[in-house]
Image (tube, rainbow, N blue to C red; front, side, top):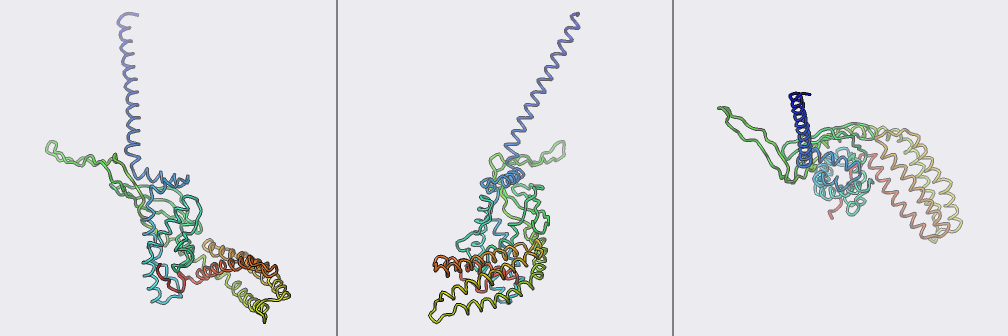
Length: 391
């Protein structure tokens, strides 16, 4: 190999090595830039916050989920949407009563929403739907909170996926695909996010004159100082209710019509059984004799409980539309509790057990609550009949 050829090959080798070094350096710079952009820019964006929230929801990471959701703000706005027509279908209210209750539920807005936040917090932590208790327990505020939760659709709405996020400064909008489990109605739920930290660095936006022409550079926002993107409102929750509720109401009305004859017929049976039960207990001394206890026990065992079981069997044979699942489950639970109450009563009178009689009384109270809830659903009633006093 002559000297000229050797020098050419050596130069080619040097150029190849320079290109390799430049390529490696370029890859390194790109990797470092990507890491920089990811941790210093992308992790501060609403897109990242929403995807992190979605993953936290699926993984049951309650702390991360709540970091990106302002439940207090969301529930206040959602309460207004939910109660805007709460009394519209209550046919038992006069116009004056309807106005009175509408004003009352404005007054208790924060208490109701505080209870909703507690319900949501508990669900996120345990994946179980519970009731808030305290002042919202039972009907102290004139409404069945369990029924209100069912009307809110929150317990039977499934999350599908995050569709998109649009960003406008310190405000953003995210769209989620959800579906109502009973009606199977899909819906694009839109939420508003705000950067509550609001510590951003803006680069660009200045005008420069170049060769007599004014040029304006675009604005780039970097949240290098931190960010706190949170969902602060659900923008079209009322639209979701309007899309789903009529379908569920129609299903419920169809189910009520289909079971009306069964309910009416057995109500007549139970009225007769109640009269007989009261008559069999009568005693001049205020307590039942031994033979009366036996007769009452046999009457409950052979007549009342079988009637309850037969009614439930007939109700179970009626097809249940998806929108009527809540009512059907309440009827099943009422039957179960009622039978347990009667069985405890039998044990109490036959074994002279005060504990079993107390259990029967407690179960009977539970049954009355369930029956009242069923009546409210059947008659589109939103509230208890008497306006409660504010605590």
